[in-house]
Image (cartoon, one colour):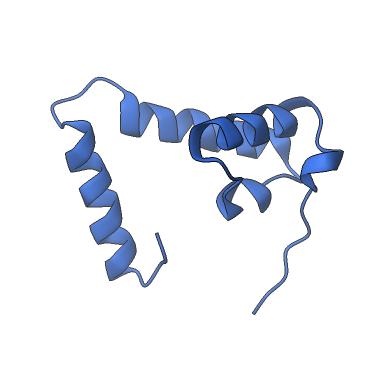
Length: 81
């Protein structure tokens, strides 16, 4: 398994700390998708803006349908969602 350096929660500041704190508040943990982007805070921030717009933004699909689609695509791609 590959290893990706990441910012530890206790060392996080700025955008990384913001998204780590939001992850903890939302899910009670910091998901790996956040951790692996922590060395490039701007990319992490852009990813979270994109995710929020896709999953929570206005559109014809209900939230549960968006989650279901994300889960199905992850399964097809062999990704643990």
